[in-house]
Image 1 (cartoon, helix red, strand yellow):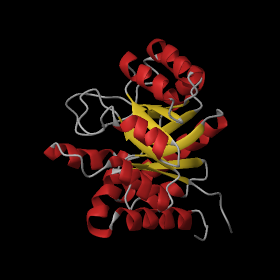
Image 2 (cartoon, rainbow, N blue to C red; image 1 turned 120 degrees about the vertical axis):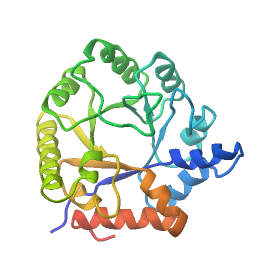
Image 3 (cartoon, rainbow, N blue to C red; image 1 turned 135 degrees about the horizontal axis):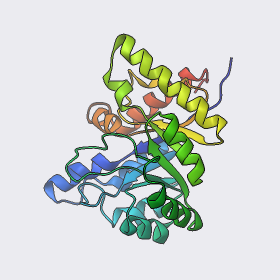
Image 4 (cartoon, helix red, strand yellow; image 1 turned 90 degrees about the vertical axis):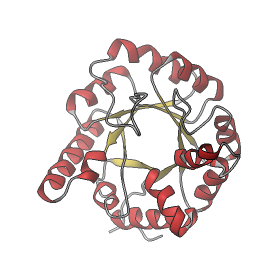
Length: 247
């Protein structure tokens, strides 16, 4: 049986983390994005944080204009980030929670509790031509909030699933799958991501309502040993295998 192809977005933030550790011009996030595209990625994800700990402002126009696949701009719900997104008009703008002290995004956005704050931001991003998505937990209240806010896409947080084992992991997978079904019924496009590895990606990729996965840190880590191209190709192979697609 042949399934429906699943898009793969590659997050190149941590290439910039290595670059910034020495204050040098290398390794280049742009080159990483181009290599990922050559290896079969469908999109590039970059998170411009308030403290600019990895991706810098100058990276955004390069990624937007010099990479042959769409840019997914991860951003906090702030006026500064909305202005940057409106200026560069990436294909997609994914609103994520952001704390200065966190090492990485620690959980989903509180869409249900921030309706008044998020509504004008989503409207402005959509008017600028960005496909807006909300990074949320696999929770009915947040799914319904996303639909009522007019965000066409949600990305379900898979970090907890990746950290659990055994029965607990299976229960979390079922929760994510149920949320994907509910979101799809609400008319939302369903994406998923955070913490996915070669070992954990296939059960998530097999959820039929999921249309896109965004994976970053693991692929950049594997690139140290395999090279970025081979790491992306292996992730693509596993995703396609989960969907019953030859590649």
